[in-house]
Image (cartoon, rainbow, N blue to C red; front, side):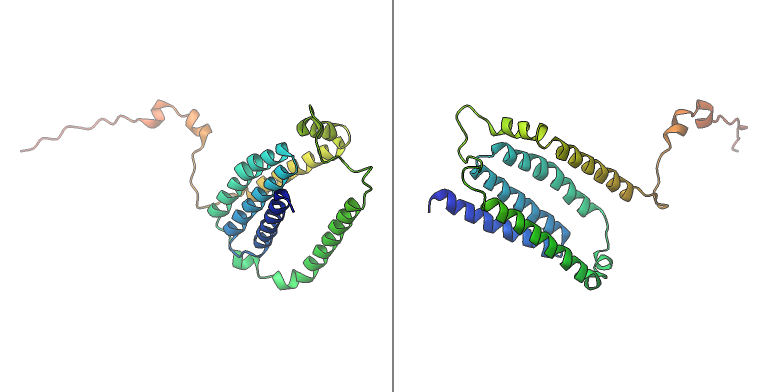
Length: 201
């Protein structure tokens, strides 16, 4: 067993542990931090597979931007998690059924991937003068262009839904009205009052 295999199994164990902690952690901040750990270990595995572009994109985009924003949102939004956990046991059978279906689908995909003949499998060694970034771009914009566009539309819908769910008016907040500030005149701000002088004896 070479050093790459040892590193792969090590990173895989850490990724599995981090994924389990994301689901089982009671504190949402701890779950988000374990998700960051899972992203880092996945990036390390991609580095072992000579997919440097995917590894750097995962670290910069998800860890550096998305997860940082997610952690700040979780820390700043006052959510009553006890109320959210009230219907856990009643929804457990449905969630378990969906989880079993997802596990079966992933097992089918993995088994189908591993039984591909070696002649039709993708080469593990990148030829000289080739770049995985270029090959990835060719695949995205040729064979998988429709899936790429569908994923972009889904992300756009998710962003709009997140903004719509968090956009609410509160009665206890105070704010400025820019329209009234622009239309204000000096006479409305300053009033000169004439008063008779007072004499002290």
